[in-house]
Length: 318
Image 1 (cartoon, rainbow, N blue to C red):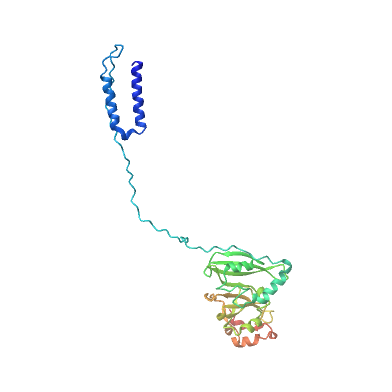
Image 2: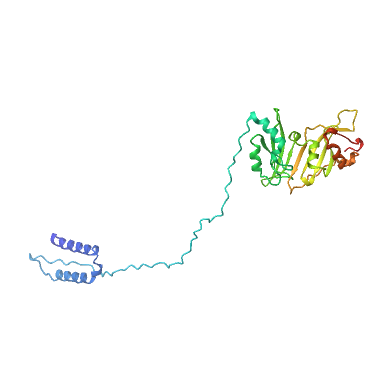
């Protein structure tokens, strides 16, 4: 292909390219007319001015460009789902309160604090103990108070009485020793408390209990493992507590005479929905082992001047 014809071909190619890229899609009819005219003009040329035979361009068939209109199909408009403006989509959860222990009791004031606590019981009456009321007080509240002066350890996970049992080691006033109390807990609520003789020395001596709470419903004598020793138990079932005292023979010469040796009562108190613990077979009522009934016992030992000794029938003891 010579230079002249190459120019014609290139001119046509450039024109075709520019026509397509410049948006001539909507002018297809005029493009076809122009294309035909150019083809006819080239084919009708017989000779070039210099006598060279004409070159016939074999042009490809004319393409008809049909305008394409894009049709946008909109998705069906759905029914809007109402969105609640209520921000409480999840149930409201009560935040767990942070554990805030009370300040530890100063060692310099600990004796005075403990004496006051043992004497006044934080202003409450049995079955409430140190402000802890079985069946009502939460373990969280009880622990917060106790940890200010006592050491608490978890004794058992669960038993037939409660889900949890916690041991509370508290200081004995004017002593370097501690003593042990136990607190029973079910479902986060204190259900039962037990505390030893030392915790009852200021408030729960025999005549004090009789004076405050009256005639007990039952009085029991219970055998224990200590030789020649028993428990004298005052049962106040309607008041939800028992007061127990250690009694023992003072000497071999009077085997039937038993005297109270514990400094105070050992107390077990329970909530209104709790049942009293069952007694073992080594327990008898006071009437079975003495010549005293409950009323006579009450009248005799209500007066502290009558002493703390009781005559029991040795052959009837458990």
